[in-house]
Length: 199
Image (cartoon, rainbow, N blue to C red; front, top):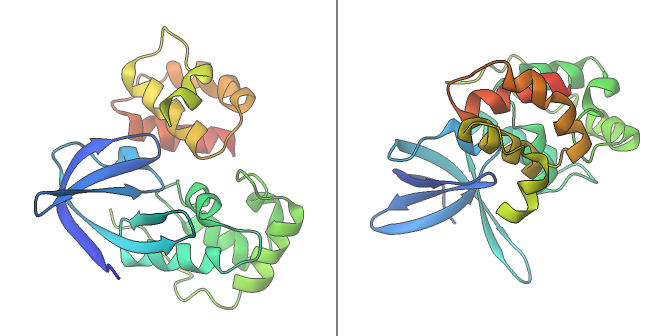
């Protein structure tokens, strides 16, 4: 069982990063891949999920984010992919506050979370979250339909990451003009702003 990887990010994809540790590259699924940069030295806290047909590695920016992932996946109806989509925003304080305040309307804005699942999240986690005052430390063909040819590479990557999180093409196309007008520096910033607009 892996606890963490410390190494160099060698590749960033809309759904994962590759981190090289001891001359071995590990594909790690993360909530917001564009939080990381190629050639960045980083530490990823790891959760390994073993299935009948796959062994998957999920990575987290810090231990608090990993703990929140584990709490979310303990809820009936929330799998690892849905949990990553919920965690895609770097600041999880709004999510935690929504759970504490019984705010199911906030939770149903996440991909794959309906009213019943939102209520289940609140029921299961409201009294279990160990860090209610949490503050953050600081496949490609599937995504082509949401990206206009006139977008910058950073915006295109950001839109692909939003699609990978489970947001529908129609939702992404609706916010694309607003994102395009922002002229942000990198894909990570487009993901963060896109998540705000989608909610």
